[in-house]
Length: 109
Image (tube, rainbow, N blue to C red; front, side, top):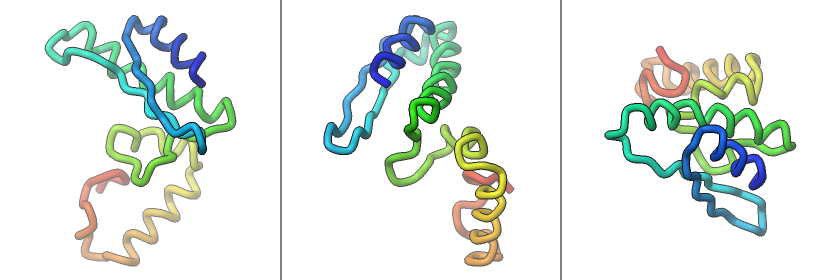
């Protein structure tokens, strides 16, 4: 994965700093950027898809830390499958039918 991150860094012309936990193989790639640079920011928005595609291809996951976050929400179905997403939505509805648990987040409305 480190080699893949280096290749993604070169492909998108972005520095990617990576730290992690050697004991469990949990990595935290961080794209270093200046959001004020519009052209650079467009590459920053495209690069995570490459990272999120590569991790499962290498037998890993991109969701090792607690919580998914809205930045990763669009990749949920690809990693976990449509059935898992539908099941998760049903659990959320069963637990809070009045939609008080983070309305509009992760699964949308």
